[in-house]
Length: 172
Image 1 (cartoon, rainbow, N blue to C red):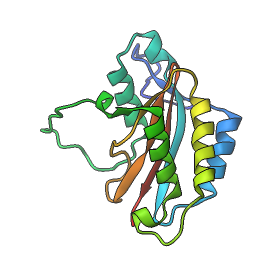
Image 2 (image 1 turned 60 degrees about the horizontal axis):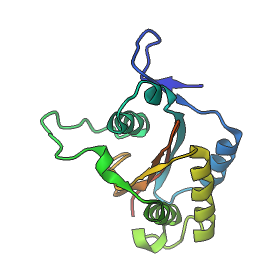
Image 3 (image 1 turned 90 degrees about the vertical axis):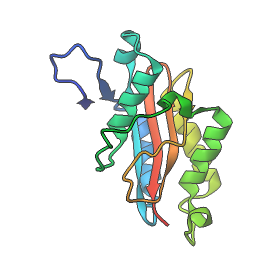
Image 4 (image 1 turned 135 degrees about the horizontal axis):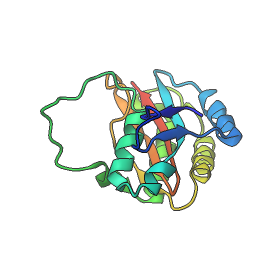
């Protein structure tokens, strides 16, 4: 397992990548449908240490997002947000529709073809959701990924003990 945000001596909770053959198969299947002008961010991590330490949902989200976000742009040190990551929470149906749209691609992002069918995308979302575990909470609308691309969208799912990213970063 790969761990990030832990020096081995710190008492700060850490995220650990989950090794799961079902997730690996799903990831392989999704990545076999390459984006026309972009890439996927797909991952599944254990957040058990954060739950065990009674971390807030905002803190868990901050760590999970930082774990997956590969944007090379340094944030403005003077920026003060007027909201938190928890404000991006949505319901299952909206998250599912958003994830399906992001996986399908096609004309809504200026491409001449779909990356996958709606049925394939729906199946991928449903399988991903099942891998995240019980009591999932859904987050969409965050700008995660390299900002030189136009579209950064998908779904972040945070459940009892797992956090998962099913995300597309793409340009038109």
